[in-house]
Length: 78
Image (cartoon, rainbow, N blue to C red; front, side):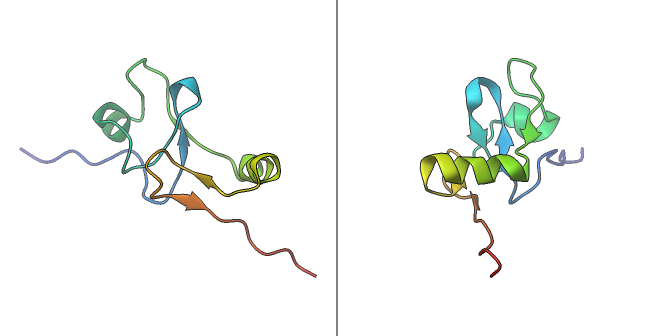
């Protein structure tokens, strides 16, 4: 029997149910291998423009729940 392949990609932050931010490492088995959380909602990658808004609002880079995936913003061009 073959091992299933994860549906989520390493280095990507996904939005899950109730506003949770997860990555491949902190996702549960359901999300990791089906792309859907336990409630049946599809987990979706966080769009880049939302990471910018996150930084503006909270003053820090967006991270997943376990802290292993961090979205760093590029330095502004001068």
